[in-house]
Amino acid sequence: MSKPARIPVVSFVGKSGSGKTTLVEKVVRELVGRGYRVATCKHHVHEIDIDVPGKDSWRHAHAGAEVAMISSPAQFAVVRKVPRERTLDEIAAEAVDVDILVTEGFKRAGSVRIEVSRDERSTELISSADELFALVTDGERDVGGVPVFGLDDATAIADLIERTFLTKEH
Image (cartoon, rainbow, N blue to C red):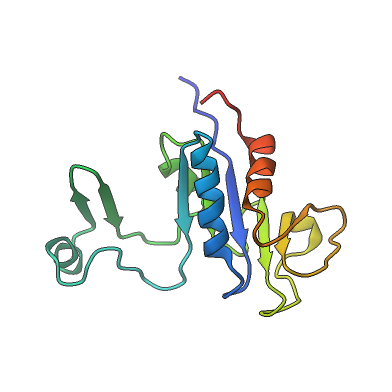
């Protein structure tokens, strides 16, 4: 049996406070509204607790369980201890039954990077022009032919992602 093709991974990067989360939320909403199934992954540099401290499943994990699962009629979550940080390929492999994985905060990973830059925060980019798929900014920038969008232009950004990576056959 052949291995299924890897889903596209689009990474939103930028300095803290640049507006990445707000933009990702808008782009995800736009893609979902077009009928695509979207997975997201937010990168954190510290240990995370997605469960409520003190609740049973949180207590299970903190008691030493390697895998703590939470299941309800509408949601299922898995918290798994790992010996090292996952690569984007490994994360994408976990994103089953979706058309695209949108990530936020993986500053040095991924080949498809959309940098979000707010002049109030900084006029310096964290990526070089050759690392960028697109730039989203409130300033005037020329990054060598890379598409440039305004901070509120989620529809045009979703158009670019759709044209480049997605098809209507899903």
